[in-house]
Length: 405
Length: 122
Image (cartoon, rainbow over all chains, first blue to last red; front, side, top):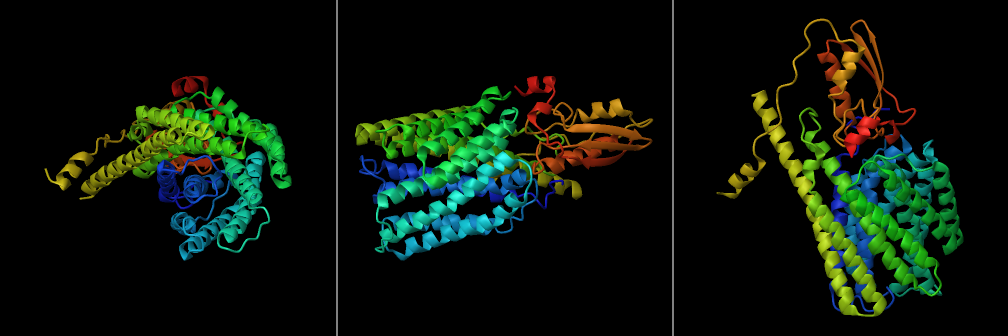
């Protein structure tokens, strides 16, 4: 099977959600800056709820969706008919915006519309990718993580809808706090964790130029993780996720290639490890583990991956007609800015968490400010790569036009 | 300078060399010469040639026909069509007719990169 231009996902379907994800991360950081948002307390409050969902739904879910259009055919080793991708992407973006607005207005029509659009888009997405993954053979360990993640997505969304019903004045849960914990663990540990480890086991070896992780190790880790999620046993899923993340850290450590994007992905994996460890320590609040997992784990990891994927796709789009003499992909990236973005993200996340733990809101807001700077720098990095690709494509097409005349 | 002029100035002219290497004169290339020619086909992601990357699996020359079995890093590799087209062009420039097949069994892995290639990647 050859990947022809007809079967490949055009760049916009992949790059669009990744760019939108970077924007939503900036929104999350911006909301976190608002006075009162980062006061110690649970996530059920309006502004913090918006910030968390801007990061999780906005940044993480969109990044996974965008990257998935390209990665599912790779995992399944078969083409994917992605004709619904534009509708899924657009519905997700609009739905997330409406939902974020609706969080501050319980029972509002906008919130209901947002929830409906998000669930509908994710359903269409699942209906598109699941058949390809289920029918595939080979790459069992990677598929186990991703398929487990998809199951966790729907279980987590179910809890989410129950919580939403409660916020709209029709409570379905006797213990909403426990419901929040299930919703968060299924979506973050389950869906996001499954996709990160599953696709990472294919992507990171290629990016880092290293051998793939041991499939038996990754398969065993997937079993632990999946069983822990299904049975509601945090210690079990934590062991599985730690084992999976360690498998990927080992890949990065032995890779022939380095660089800021890979370093950021590696630090993100370490953040996931720390979050899992915190979740298993008695006396450490779930909030802390969740914050570390999000801000120092999943977010930097996906930022690092986006810094590899977006320039690559943009370059392919710009130079797809003629490989000979094309400038290297490195012309679309600037290492200095990538390192700066990594440092800001790390510092911002650490200071934010320190501030929340110590109950010092001013410190937490300083962390949010640094995090916002990191998110804006990420936007700059991705946008610049796209602009240069657009320029190169215009140059190439202008020359082709001259040759024809 | 108007906005449009600034934009045109930023876009600038195409800087890539436009001439393609001329076709080979004389008898068609043999296997080793074809392999050397394929070392000029560079994978844009890793920046090393496809032979060092281990993407060229087998070459068989039968008269004027060159059967090349190659692979890609993944079946969904976005630069796959570009590399395939570049390989076919290279074979033709060597005075041979290409018969290209793609195989993904076994799948390519970074372990297939030659030691020299790995040094260049660093």
